[in-house]
Amino acid sequence: MKALIEEDNFELPLTPMIDIVFLLLIFFLLATTISEEEVDLAVNLPGGTQGSPVGEAAGTRLVVSVRKDGSITLGGQELPWEEIKQRVLDAGRRQDQPRVYLRGDQEAPYGKVADVLQLCQEAGIKQVNCEFRLHELRP
Image (cartoon, rainbow, N blue to C red; front, side, top):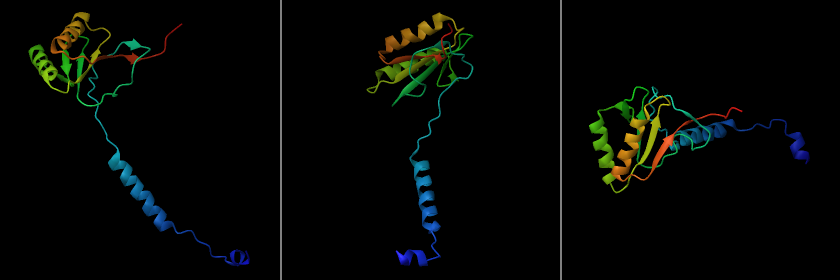
């Protein structure tokens, strides 16, 4: 006990701790996967109170958006309907079927949204998620 009291120059070695902090920082930066969401900002989603958060998909996915003016985008790119149809049908034939995220603007014509749902059914895609903007219910 007397030896600890007599020792006045007790220093904590900071260099190894700083090295460990930098190694941990580098590890977490490399281990983190950063995914870029395929979001069409021109789509104003209708409100909903239930559902899963955006970006919960694992594996292959297709993001189909129906805009206010009725135009349809696939992965953020506005394509002709025939090309969208062909890509969805091709995706439905693959062994690992994709999950389709259907994002429809709240003012989009429902017929266009129904066309996309019908196309997914024709392609045999069973996992179709409709995304809504979550908000609280008003009394």
